Length: 469
Image 1 (spheres, one colour):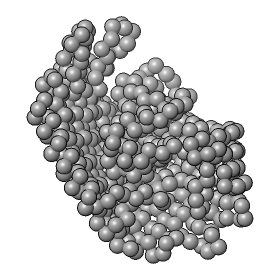
Image 2 (tube, helix red, strand yellow; image 1 turned 180 degrees about the horizontal axis):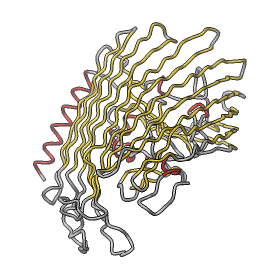
Image 3 (cartoon, one colour; image 1 turned 180 degrees about the vertical axis):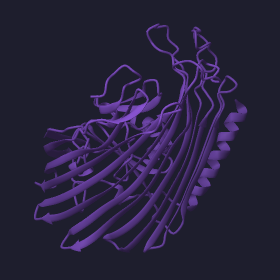
């Protein structure tokens, strides 16, 4: 215990020396999705977690960070052991996740494992509950979560940190490390962030009673390792014009602990994920058109690849039984959005067009590749009326369309095409927001919002327990 305490003191001294030489980061404003052009309106309900809170409270993953917000509940999702959250009862399919306003949820099922996303490269996390801007695009039925990256403000700034944990039981060690370096040279800036998070396992209570697949001590198959690199390059020819290019690369692997209860109706799975990788390239621009009008654009290309191995038993060495398999996902998404904003007296009007193309491929070690593709469109109009310095009205409407391009099934040794299935929906909403004082806010909102069904919703057999709908 003494060694562990000294080790953390050395890391603290290193962090303080760096903090004195180079100051804190600035929020990447282009990454925000706002309902105002020049300033934030009072009481709009967006809750924010900044980088200082993330580090002070040691919130290493996005899931852990969101768990501190009222109305947000952390959960480990099903047999895949993914970390997720419920936002006022809505799960990740109804509350999509964005990085700098760009959707990053998995094309197949709309989920994203928030335990794979570390917080070391973030300047802020924005959470909208229920009422969220229609400018985000489709599927924000229960709100939206936006992870906003860093933007340097000084000629040289940086941060370096790390840590090591050692549990009471051998084999439960963990390590983490991160670095942030940035430079702002006036008309251009650059930001580099990198992080590493590893946990071998965790120890169970001494009072734990052994079950068939968990004998106590170290939790079986509970390892994880995640690395992440985030790069950004920006050009600012004037105070109101900005053009940024970003790149994010995540590499992960994990094990799913087997069921440790005694309910005989629960199927125990012996799953490991040799890789869970995500790569994103995006550009965001903002151009001043004069008279307060702005044009904002986003372009992005996102790759998601993972593998899932199901084994015979808790030795994780053989794959001979019927439920054993090897499965691979190979997905990509590309899309764009245009957002035009114009102040008109006390009103700020914004018009946005979002386009998204999802490509999903899946197969296991005995079946051919099956391909699924969707196109999504969203046309949105939003009007913000500032009644006075403490009151505002926001009205918005969007028309969302999902176009099923391709969907393949496999039956009796042959690939076949599912029938097309397209859908669309109108999403109107209005909200009144008031700031009572610096510590109290109130709002009344009314909305009719829709979630368009995912590829999995429509076409999954769910391991033989369902038929495509």
